Image (cartoon, rainbow, N blue to C red; front, side):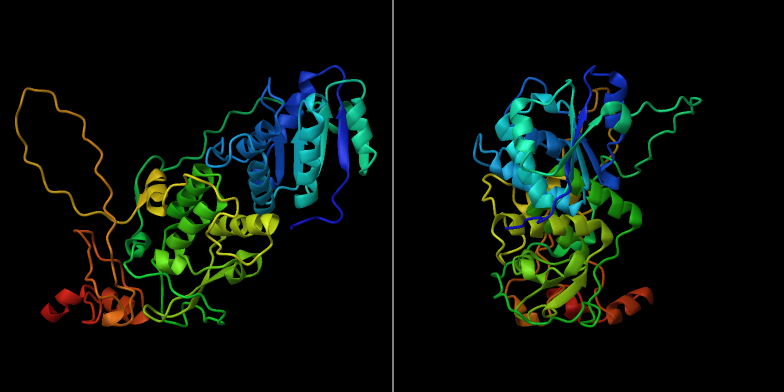
Length: 408
């Protein structure tokens, strides 16, 4: 079980007049990307589950967690702890702390022990509650006035509001060539404890993703699910071009220090066991998946499985479609222009085609079934040889669809 032996002391801020200036100062300090989280609890609730959902919402995670046992707060608190450690969050400020109940405060202290976060409680009363004072005697804490820690900001001349950062790929489907090889026919390979070489030493190069696309993919994965294992699995498929068979072989021990590398195994049918570098945008997702296992059991389990045993989580392809991520699709047939006075109907969404591609297999007998591309374009070259020849305008005869190689 993950535990912080010496968590920082708890800070209790007294705001007896419930001054709006101090509340605004606390809300203004909310900056998850800088390690500061401010939680404004949902009014009219006193359950520990609701408070855990408020913390997840402050982390920009969708709530509630309907895939777990109803009315059980433990999965939500464990998930919140994993995301706090992976982000990482160093300061957690809770407003309306005078409305805390004993069981909610105990869950907050357990979160503090797990993550080592600096807990700040803003009480809008003159004195601390009796039970809160009794519990605080058992932990190191400080009590301060709101005017000292949440001062009013100095008046400044109004600055013109800057428009929000433009997202050119917002609400658009992203076609990622790496997802072309996600589906496969073969069974899960036997995991091993080998010291796998780097992917470039195996002469394997996944498709390159532009920085703008990387930022949009990371944003969607962070905000589309609270389950770390699901977001981490899809992120790994995006930057490794691995199949589900290879993804299922990854264990917690296969994730390198600081989540900078991850090792995927197979039986030698593709390129062999390989260690892939993890890009910076995907490291928090993989760290959260590994940390959730450390929080719950501390065992070396499959990395992309859920230690909380959630029910009803979508399959990987369905989750990718919910994030509007998919492999390049077949070209649409050209429609004739028909002059008609009747108004045109809105286009119905086209179902995503998930091909089965064996381009990354080393040997032709690696999989008995042929490719089922269903009109989807073939993935880009994945070796130094094929990439160099692709730049020259032609491909070697050993790349692509096996049933078409004799035509080259």
